[in-house]
Each structure stands twice: as C-alpha cells, then as structure tokens.
Amino acid sequence: MSTNFYIKTKLVNSKEYLFDELRKKWILSTPEESVRQQFWKYLHFEKKYPKSLLAIEKKIVINGLNKRFDLLVFDELGKPHIIIECKSPKVKIDQKTLDQVLSYQNKLAANFIILTNGLKTYCIEIDLELKKASYIKEIPEYRISRKK
Image 1 (cartoon, rainbow, N blue to C red):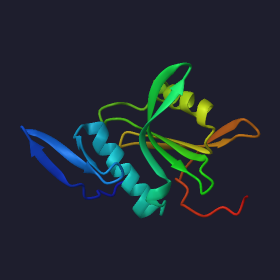
Image 2 (image 1 turned 180 degrees about the horizontal axis):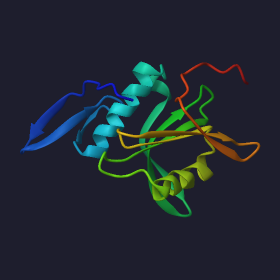
Image 3 (image 1 turned 120 degrees about the vertical axis):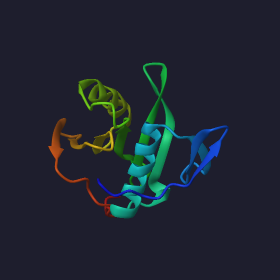
C-alpha cells in the first residue's frame, strides 16, 4: 500500500487534528491514526469496499476486558470479514501485534486478518472450518458473495 490519500487537517491549540470521514469527527493526529485513516481509504478507493461495510475503532469485550479494534470490514450479511490492526510506522509488526489481533479474531471469527504499520502490511487468510491460517500476498478486493 503506497498510495497517499488526502486527509483534511486543522490545528487547534498547536495540535494537529484530522477529519475522520467514517466517524464524521475530528481526531487528534497521531502516527497510528494516520495509518488507520490511510488504510481505510485504501480499502475503500483501491479495493472497492463500501464505506457502509467499514467500522473504525469500536469497542469489543474480550475475557471481560474492553478492547478496541482499529478497523473491521463486514460482509453484506453483517458478519466480520476482515480485522485490521494498525500500528505507528515506528512500531514493528511482531508476535505481540499478531497475538493482539488473534484475540479479536477468537471473538469475531473473520475470514482475514491484516496487520499494518503503513510501511509493512501482512494479510492472513483464515479458514474457519479447517482452523488454518495462511499468509497471502494480496489483500482481497471487494466482491459481493452469493452465499445466503
């Protein structure tokens, strides 16, 4: 993912804020937030996922603890399809990052997991029936499934 999408920004009390079009509000600009904003735009504009199927920073309860996933793509039936974990470009994607997203996966049962820091992106396809995971080279494009 090398495209740089436009993000509206403003300064308030010498702090930069970016406008999140999904949440429809201004968010304090951090390196991780910039990665999150760029990535959902990449999914929408390059991979053709409709905004209506994207959720950003929503609460999820895991083992009684409140957590927040970065991005979640739903399928047309409203089931979790792709979980995306975003980190700052300074943060290395490692086992701890993978463990974090796997804890969300255990709860959400998505078909794909994506880990990104804006510099490196890893995509893992999950076969829920066979309980197998495999790295794939390309993030899947949006296509309407015919499953009912």
